[in-house]
Image (cartoon, rainbow, N blue to C red; front, side, top):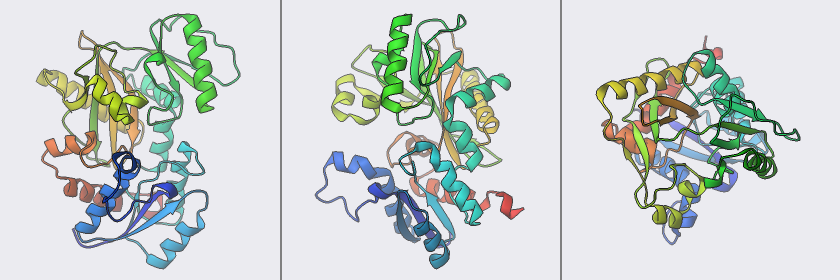
Length: 339
């Protein structure tokens, strides 16, 4: 790939340093994705300018006018502290006629709203757990179709915010208590869905129109028989990971037919939610082999050595090739202003 002017967009408090020297693992974890992407792009020969954003778009407008970047590499996870505003930033990039990496605004909007995305999946007859939404300030009345055990989470928040082993509830009192917890701690509506006992699987996808799936990945607890749930501590607490023996690796023991089925479902979700660039699908598979889609994650974690990059590596796509592919897809994405 030719050398490009890249404008890396990151959260203002996640602008990485130039070196890891003297930094603790806890510090590095905060901005590892940003560091890995920016450092690797520079090593590939691209001219990378890093722009930290928080609650003001004028620096973005100025950088676009001043630098005329070939592409904005979007690593933003929120704006004004709101996770769903990332789609507004991408909409602004489109208004500025600025090519960008990752998902388009509509795909971000649909995938971030878990209740809306599940309704779309239901329309397309894509298997997903039965669910109900409990709005803030409303009494919790469980519909009869929703059977226990039930998994409770925020409708909009990501990175497993508010998710723990206590998120699985077994009676109406536990349900009401957990919904109240989600309301209080996330200030968002609560999504309650049928808890699917079984294997937790992830499928990385990359592409705009022609889609490529990476090998199916699986979350495992090698030192515990606790329910396999990707809680916040499982994702981010190193001591807790060690305690449970948390491991993610290529899923084993799946027949070729089941693999094809899972890949086909993942692609159907990608298209149904109008995603582009790259995404990761989270699924559960019961002991009887039935597969359910939990959610779609647009613009998933791009850290070197994490699930998405590791699964790409298994597909013979190096980290450098992965970033080049993502940039290429961003440059080729047919945004409305290009038509």
